[in-house]
Length: 141
Image (cartoon, rainbow, N blue to C red; front, top):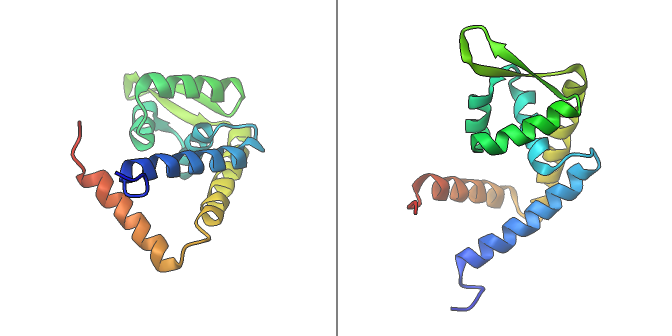
């Protein structure tokens, strides 16, 4: 099979390109792309449990813990016990984190626009719909 016909090759190369692109954009904030996305999720909804944040980001607990450790060390987040459930932790943006989460959200939005600028509005909509359909309906291994 020719590489241009192999969807897995095409997805892998597109992922590599998009990942490098976003990493370069958020590096100006001294963040990794995953850290920027986590701050972006918190920008949308602050003070959520780490479990809920992990679900939204589709990250396992160990991976998320490492990211949260680094964000906390940088002063962007605080972890506080959940008064309703002692087994869970709420993640709060600090003042510094609120500023950075807004910047991260802005940079990610600009990166989205710039990365997809070669597509028409209809192609962008179709691409999002195709990706969503594949993610929801593809067989799992």
